[in-house]
Image 1 (cartoon, rainbow, N blue to C red):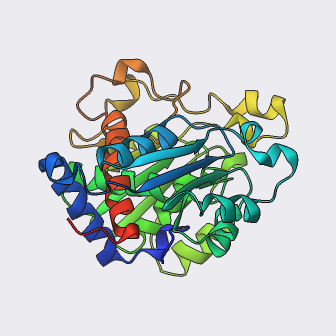
Image 2: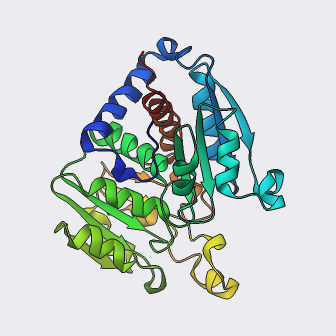
Length: 305
């Protein structure tokens, strides 16, 4: 039995295999329509979510399976003080696989050690969000046709952005990838991510506070929102929340082949005027998340189609 807590638990070969499965699901949906018939997915969401929870549910339904679970801690026995360990032990009796989001870093890891079924980390605090990274990877693959030879700009909240940390870890395994880190001083990429991944592997990166100055060199621009829920100080949030707003004006020097990604939800960091730009990939990215979650569920349940 295998869980997925961190994107680096998947080898580059396994990511290629998941991408291939997702591509086949897109091409032949009817082939997969009953693949998980009789299987149940439990969605244990101790923190609010729209896309991640609904895409997990849609993924399981489209595989012919069923879904049970809760969408906030208040509607679970956690509100009575039940531990994560006890919750997953019990839920393991009712479901074949668990997708879990939790505000505390490490909670899904603890769950995976106690559960009797595979656990998928659907986001833990500011830590990891491996299935969002799978959505990002499929989007990059479908837009670029490769993972190598890319300059990736990461813009916004690089300090608390778990999607950013996971994407850097995943893309660090491919050749000739360069990162451009664009953020206010207060929201810079944590030094441990730079040290443990970028510096350790000798991956080139630059840091800047100015998005427009680096725009012409980017192949991928990954925008993120400044996350109110990660701030202890409302004044600090208000001061930083509008640091980077992507507008058509700022895209004037960008490559025609640029791909703009965003893990969503967007607040105002990408102008709606960009939604019709062919370079905007964020809604496709949300759809790609469903396909990659379908591929991952099949893999962890050991279902052959």
